[in-house]
Structure formats: structure tokens, C-alpha cells
Length: 463
Image 1: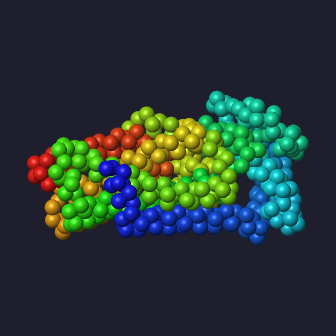
Image 2: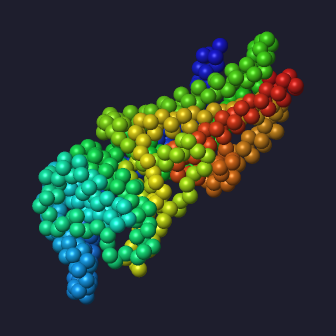
Image 3: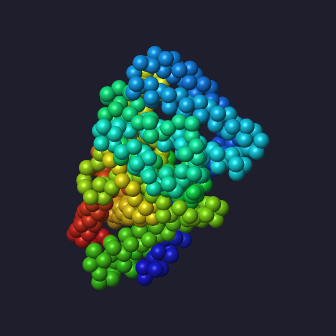
């Protein structure tokens, strides 16, 4: 009987509308991802960025030369400045070469892609090295990543550089405040660099490269209101179908069955849960397969930066609204430093860990399934308990407003189950509510809805 009920739900007009909404949101995410890929591969855009960077480094070189002349008497600063100036000159030469390659072959040129990637990796190595303080127990980059240096050193040209990377630790020009932040962020920075070197010969997973996993990140993380609307659709879907069934006496057969109230309600909820899951799987799966067939499914074993404690404790780490991307993961900064107009530096000093992408997606799916179950139980429970259509509509309208307001503003988080928004961000541990807390909160809420619905409906004998 459950199978026929699920089929009946999927054949309902509301199911088609729900599926259309999911497909449209998938299309929106696809368009946004394609736009990001196109802009990142646009020759004119990249050329302008490289030219801007070239002008900036020429200006910085003049400033560094003046600083070197001023501090020539300080042996420590003189050594650092000598290498920093050579590094700056190297960047200028590399940028000029990259612009020339870009003008000849565009972004599709394999030579340009190879040189551009190597340039980015070397700049990252030096940038992290400048904020490594060995006297504070931080190992230099060439020591921390010795295996990766040995593996990729020749290919990257690390041994032919005109400057000495090992002599560029402990930038002497940073403030004590920034130095403390750098020391605190050391593990995260080295983790970023290790990921970068480990995946040097692999396709990078990010919003500037197409993949089915980048599509999921765009869908579940970039637009908060998308998930809010999907949650509301599940709520209205389950409520509207039972309201329609009560009006045309579809459930008279269930009424006369010698089942307990729990079994009757379980029948309804299971039907809606499976049906909603099928609709979401089809709507999202179509676009996921599209990106997989287009770009391949490789990368499922890559790693994500996450707060690994989010699966074991109830309180999340405090962070700012500012974030940067590391692959498909948002790294929210908990420290922000503005250096005299030269730019803003963001640090994630809270120690993050890494998780294989397939495990991350598994944990996210568990949380998403609980959210679907929660809203399916809520919608069906409201209609089962409230006999009059107008009263039920009023209550479900209030639940809809509460869901939208809670998720878009974060009201009542972490104690409000309606405020649990992006399962992607919650699984990362960056939504000010841990994954474990969200799972337990949704589970408890589902049990509470079930108890209230079965108890009240049993007393009134209205199922």
C-alpha cells in the first residue's frame, strides 16, 4: 500500500510543480557556475588582471628598494630585503612572460596554463613562507613540505629561482599583532599549501573549474534563499496533499484499518519523505549528471577543509562574515587585519582539519535527509491535527514565515530547528551550529512532532 501511496503523491500536480522548482534552481546554479568558469577563462579578463598585477608589483618594487636603502645597516632586514626584491623582480618578469603567452595562444594554450599554475604555486609558497616564524616553533615551508618539494621541485623550477626561499621567513616588517595571528594560523596555512602541492598534477576543484561537485557547492552554498524556498516547498507539499486527500475522502480506507495512530502517521510521513526525496534527487541529479558527463566525476577523493570538531561537539567556533575559498570549501576568517591601506589580510586561526569529499557529501546528505523529514512531518502533522482548512492554512502560513525569517536572519540559532539553513555550511562547521547539534536537534524535533501528532489525533480520533 505504501508503494501506491508514493506513486499517487508523485503523480500529483504539486509534485510536478515542486520538481519544476528544483529544476529551475538547478538551472540557476548551472548558469552561475558557467558564468564563473567563463570569466575565469576569458582571455581579456585574465590579461587585465595580469596587467594590473604587473603595475602593482612595479610600484611595490620601488617602495621595497627605498626600504632596503633605509635599512641597509640592519643585517637581518638586509638579508630579507635582498631576497624580497629579487622575488619582486622575478614576479615582474614572470607576469610579462605570461601576458606575452596569453596574447599569442590565449587561455587555452597549454604552455600558458602550465606557466600560470606554476607561477601561482611559487607565489603561494613564498607568501606563506614570509609569515613563518621558526623562533615560535613554526617549521619553514621547505621543511614542512619537504616531500612535496622533492616531488615537484624540478617541475616547478624551485631550484632555479633567483632568490632563496629559505631566507624569506619571519617578515621583519609586520606588527606584533599580525605576527601572533600568523603563528596562530600556521597550521591552516600549511594545510592549504600541502593541499595545493598534493593536487598540483590533478584537476583543481573550485568555482573556476567545472565539476559536478562545484555545481553542488553553487546550489547549496551560494544562494541562501534557494534552500529556504526548497524547505518551504516540502512543507507546503506535504500539507497540501493531505488537505486535498481529506477533502476528497482519500484516507477513508486508512481510517477503518486496525492500526495504531503511530502506524497511520508513519505511513503518511514515510510516503511524503520518500516522494520529496525522489523529487529532489531527480531535480538535482539531472544537473549533477549533466556536469559529470561534461567535466567528469574525478575528484571525489579530494579533501575539504572542515571543522572536524563539528561532528563531535555542540558548540561551533566563532568567526567573521569574511571568508576565502580553498577549493570548494569556504574558510571563514576569525581575524581580520588592515595594513595601512595596502590591503586586508584574513586569517583563520581556528585549527581546521580535512575530510575526504565523499565523506563530506555523506554527512551533508544525512543532515539534508533529516531536514526533509522534519518539514515533511511538520506539514503533514499540521493538516492531520487541524480539521478546518482555513485554520490549517493559517498555521502552515505562519510556519512558512517562521522558516523564511529564521533561515535568512539566523534568528534563534542554534536552538531553533527552523534556522538550520545550508547543510553544506553546517557540515563545514561554519554556520554557528555544529553538524552534531543540528542532527540531534532535527531528530528531537521530529520525535516531538510525532508524539504530539499521534497523541492529539488519537484523542480526537481524526486520522
